[in-house]
Amino acid sequence: MVFEKIAAMLAEKLECEGTEIKMETEFSALGIDSLDVMELLMNLEEEFGTEIEMGENKVNTVSDLVTLIEAKLA
Image (cartoon, rainbow, N blue to C red):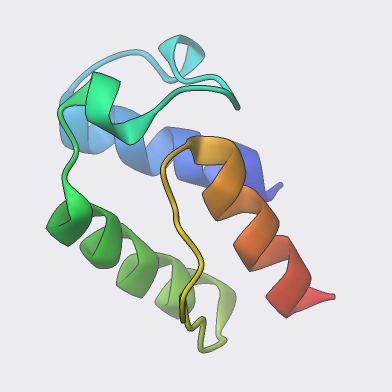
């Protein structure tokens, strides 16, 4: 569920098909910078109704972001 939501949000932002987004996709390969990741994270916080802090966690791939959010929701 988390991956699908992230893929849909990224596809909308990038105006591409959600099927192009994979777990191993790096944000840099999509042309997404750290500010875009933070914006995405804020939208996901709103979507899931929780506060998600990145702390010192590096978020470079879709998988990194999925793991971070799933840990918070658990």
